Length: 157
Image 1 (cartoon, rainbow, N blue to C red):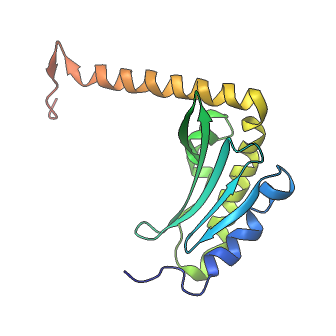
Image 2: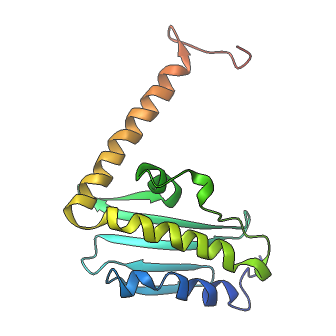
């Protein structure tokens, strides 16, 4: 498999864009891999990963947090919508080539900067725990909608 970021363009563009995690929120890092940067919170309870997904050509940001003793993973788009900051389309994360990588990196960094205040401290832990409950309710509703009187609904209905 060829290296996606041979010249380090993703890393050299993403590092300064996401540096606010270090300067404003006290995160350590980033831990640097070829196409992924990971920042860890000072208390060790939260990690933010910024990934260039090579087969989809997009910038993917995930927030992982320990809740009830388990690491739970949240996608930036999911959090952005849950915080009522706007629609998913606000985050332009599609990479159209390395020459245009600055726009999607900047867009995802700006969205994460807006989300981060919602994730801080005990209020942040409560927000994410509530989001887990909402996910489970959404999953249950979707499961119920797929079945009609105990039988799977035919796709052609």
